[in-house]
Length: 287
Ligand SMILES: [Zn+2]
Image (cartoon, rainbow, N blue to C red; front, side):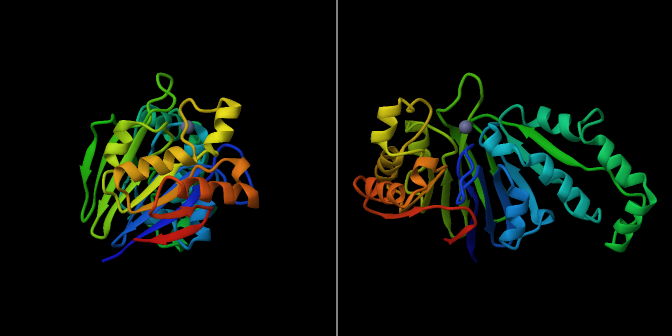
């Protein structure tokens, strides 16, 4: 029994050499669950040795583009690589998860021309058959669900529950998730200010992946505190919640330099005595 966390995206809307956007995959005893699908997530899957067709469930924390911009690419690639026997993809998140999915691949979706062409063009049908598929080639099928902060789901050998994050409301609904596997508990804060609901969700977690936009001092100076969590806030939430390991994610561009990295780690260590990891893209952690 094992749980592995693939950090595909540990950054923000600002691309840096180390980080861009948010995306994670958890391998829970062989079942792959994705949390967010930020920029280049599909390509980063390949970089860590995973295939889109292995993902059965995708959860969104919220619909800022740094968390969902690769969703169309992921959907189309998963469908294109499929031979029609893979389980239907479950996509779960706050609104507009259903509406976004429909706008991409629905009957009037932005990418309908592409998949219809691949279903009907003999050359594409030939590639599909060579890959192991049987004609007629099915259209993409996705089961999308809009959820709220009371959401819970029990999978085979894992379970998940949501909590309200405090971020871009009332413009966007924003969630945090706690995933329980046979190896332990992992909490994804999504984007949030330090707040009680996320802290409660993280109670006693083995791993807390928490937004860490910048140092608290820099955020006070720039006034970038609303809806965001800094290094100190992440550390204080981890400490109060009694988390075992704190992984700093959603790391802002000002922490990309060696001095920024040092400031992030020392700032977090001042408020949290457990293990601290400053995440970068393609990092793999075992639970
Ligand atoms: Zn956001």
